[in-house]
Length: 191
Image (tube, rainbow, N blue to C red; front, side):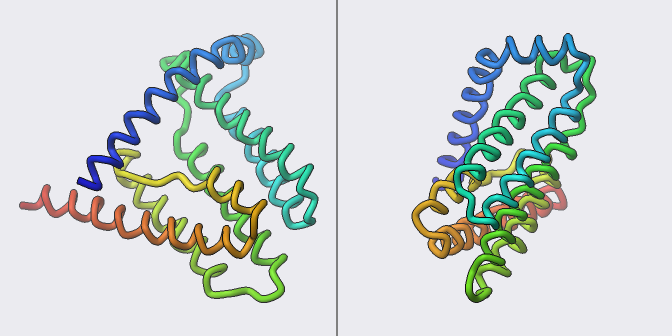
């Protein structure tokens, strides 16, 4: 029953993505007329996200929020542009996926480096995070996953230690569910 709930969540995400694309259609047309590719927008998003990580490390929360907002905006633009003219843009999903993972890992590292002591959680979060998203990518995006970026960033404003522990719980949960889903899928094909 739990997996059904997660898949219903994916359906909601897909519906939201369609609504978001309609909202971003003017921006997609604008970037299309400028001959920007989705991958170019992904690189801009990556630069904004990594800059946000730097400002998080520097404890400049105003600039962290500003650059995370710009990152999220351009992260939305790249996907909307790729879906705007899907036959023209052979957008590399892998580039977008890796860029998003790099940004999250930079945030985990920024929090760990700011911490008075680096805990086991600081080490395990990026490991579980990358493991779970590697399985997600190998499953071609068809496996259940909990997206933690927004949850993590919001909890950072409450308490960085709490954010790290919540991220550890969610990435461990993702790792277990994705391991079961991915390898269960592989075993079904063998039988």
